[in-house]
Length: 171
Image 1 (cartoon, rainbow, N blue to C red):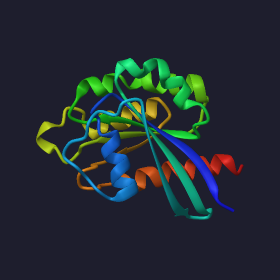
Image 2: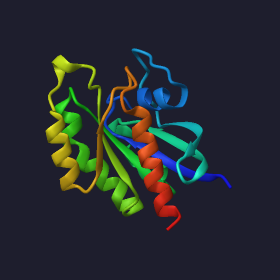
Image 3: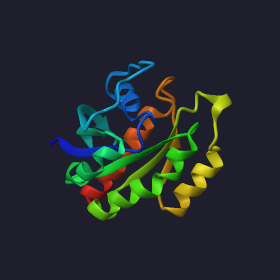
């Protein structure tokens, strides 16, 4: 039996959603990507502890305000989400409530994992890990800091979310 799950990546434009998904799916990193227009779909088959073969459909949503009207359509059927902010961009952190609310309004209490991305940019960090952790606790989210550039904790983030999804699906 192969488990299937749909994961959506949420967050403002340029927080590194596309970089994270390509690091996870292809183990590659590019310095620049064009903004995702609408949605980018990727798939990764993997083996998850205690579950075995799992196929993850990953929906990388465009973060621009202009795609807000389509967001609910993309969220349909999602089993969980990575909610991403850029640790060097305070505005991306301040917009998290909006992303989490739109997900929860559509998908209820499906698993969410909060990610503070771009930790490789040490000198430019504006949101300390402690602040991210506190936000996550307050909103009942799992939390990790990552770097799509170095690959730091990227696999862990996706695997952790997928495991939470499978735990729910098999209850």
